Amino acid sequence: MNTGNFDNFLEQIVKTDKSHVRLCDDSFASFSKNMERQQVAAARQKKIINYAVVPVVLLTIVLNILFLFNSNQSQDFQSIDTFAEENHISTSTYYFSEVLINE
Amino acid sequence: MNEKELVNALKQKDSEAFKIVYEQYYSRLKHLCYGMVHNSEDAEDLVQEVFIDLFDSISRFREEASLSTWLHRIAINKSYKLLRSKKVRDIFSRLDYREIQCPDKTEDEDIKSKQIDELHNAIKALPERQAKVFTLFFYENIPQKEIADILELSSVSAVEQLIFRAKQNIKKSMKFEDND
Image 1 (cartoon, chains in turn brown, cyan):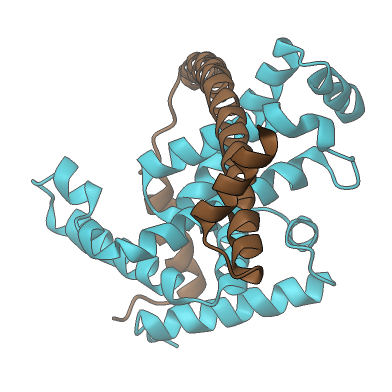
Image 2 (cartoon, chains in turn red, blue):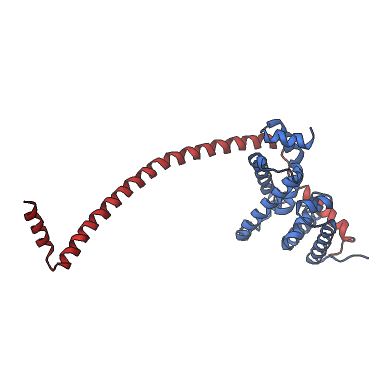
């Protein structure tokens, strides 16, 4: 390629290239519409998130309660098993003696 | 309305002030974004994003730099973010939109179109700082002092050097030979 002075060549090319840039006459109007649309979408998303948060929180609370209840129960069974093992008696003997004591 | 008043009005979300800024900077920012991404539609989207950012985060503008500098920085960062994401799917974007729009080109237009493509590829191959400086200087004709502010470069001579190196690299990429 041989087109003379590089700076002039560059300026010409950039000038031609820049002429491809389409400047919208009503750009601000379309921008305002876009902004409006975006704000509506953001508000809607916020609403959806709020609606989704409530059941998730409730479900977490219920699951936590269930977990705590379950772990307490298994702890009770574990302590009975340990007691029975330490005293060389079976678990059923333990229950039987408990019933007798209560009666 | 001077810049301080304009910024204050923007912070109050004054739509008239916003329109003034939009009309003042729209074409400048579009040329800048186009110089970075070489696609008019992408440039339009980027400019819109810049103004959305302006609207959303004007309260965080600390006025250490001018509004123009701030807007140019946002535009450059957004353009580069797009370019980075585009690199991944570059293989699909080989088709030039100019080719689609005007298939019946004259020989002269065809040469110019090829030269523009070569220039785009040469700019893409430049190191990031050189490409930014080149685009700001050639596509937007921004004074070197302002370019130094926008890109947070130490001095005007640093800008001069980057422009010089960018031109050398582009010259080499485009296989340009001087007549003299």
